[in-house]
Length: 470
Ligand code: BGC
Image (cartoon, rainbow, N blue to C red):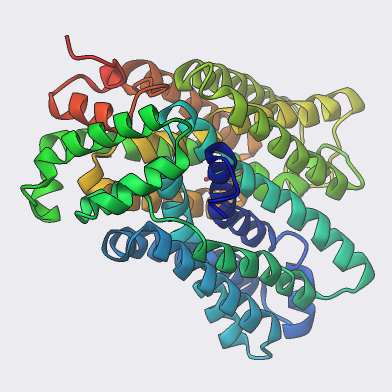
C-alpha cells in the first residue's frame, strides 16, 4: 500500500483505518437507542434489567480503558488496535446469536472492553503518527468516526426496526465494520514514537519517511524525537514517572478536561433527546434524533478542517459559550413551564421550536469544540514515556463521568425538573471557560516533543504551547 500511495494519501488511509475504532464506539453506544424494546420483547425483562443492559457496556469501557493503557505500552499501539477489533468482532457475533441472557450481558460487557480500549488506543495512535501540522485534524477524525457511528446506527436501527423487527440484525450488522477494522489494522504501521520508546530507531525512521511529505520534514522530526529520547534512555520505571510533579500537573488538567466533556451534558442529549423532544411536543421524535445525529456529524467534519488552522482554544471559547447559552435557554423553558420529561404537558409551538433549535445549536457547538478537542488535548499533553498511563487515567474519568450522567439524568429531571439539570450543565460549561483560559495550552502547530520539553522545564500549563523557551 505504501509504495503506490504518496505520503499524504498513505497517512490519510492509515488514519481512517485506525479511526474506525471510533466508528465502532459510536455504533455500539447508539445501538441501545431503538433496540432495547425489541430485546425486551424477546427476554421479557424488568425495567431494571433493561437499564443494566443499557449501562453494562459503559462498565466494560471503564475496565477496557484502564487495561488498554498497559496493553498499549507493552505490546504497542498497533497491536492494541488489532486486539480491540478482534474483541469487537467476536463479541458482536456472540451477542447477536446467543439465546442466553447471561451470555448476552457478558458479550455487551466485552464489547465495552473493546470500546474502552479503542477510546484510548485510537487517539493515542493518531497523535503519534500524525505530523504536527495536521495532528489536530487527524485526531478529530476519531471524533468524526464516533459521530458517523452514532448517526449510522440511528438510521440502521430505525430501518431494521421497521422492516425486520430484529435486534439481532441491528447488533450483528456491526460485525461488518469490526471485520474491516480487524483486517485494516494488520496493515497499519506501528507509531514512530512507540518504536523509539522501545529503542527500534531504524523502524521509527523508516515510518517517518513513509508518512512525511518531504525528506527534510521526516529527518527534522526524527532528530527532535531522538533528542527528546535523551531523558527516556535513563529508563525510569512508570511508577517513578507517574509521581513526577510535571506529570501530575498535566494529569490533573486532563482529568478536568474529561470531566468538562461529560459534565457539560452531551450524553444526556445523545441518549435522551428522544424523550426531551417528545416533551417539546414532537409526535415523531425519532426523526429529530436523527437530525441531531446528522448535525453532530457535520459539525465534527468542520472541526477536522479548522482545528489546526484556528487553534484549539478559540474554538473551545466559541463552543462553550454557545453551549452555555443553549443550555440556559432549555433550562429556562423547563423552569417557566409545566414541561417535564415523561409528562403529558406539551409546550406551545414557539417554545417547542426554541427547545429543538437550542438542542441543535448545543450539539453543533459541542461537535465542533468540546467533542474533538478534549480528545486531542488528552492525546497531546502527556510526555511520551507515560502518555499511555495519562491517557488511561483520563479516559477512565471520561467513561466514569459518562456513566454518572447517563444514569442520573432521568432521575434528576424527574425529581427536580429539567431546569436543574440543564442549569447544572450550563454551570459546568462556564467553569470550562475558566479552565480553558487559565490552564489549557494552545497546542496548534507545536510538536509533541516541544510540548514535553516545555512541560519538563516547568512552564505554566497555559504556556506549554509556546514554541521556544525564553
Ligand atoms: C464523547 C462521548 C459522546 C460523543 C458524542 C465523544 O467525544 O466522549 O461521550 O457520546 O462524543 O458525539
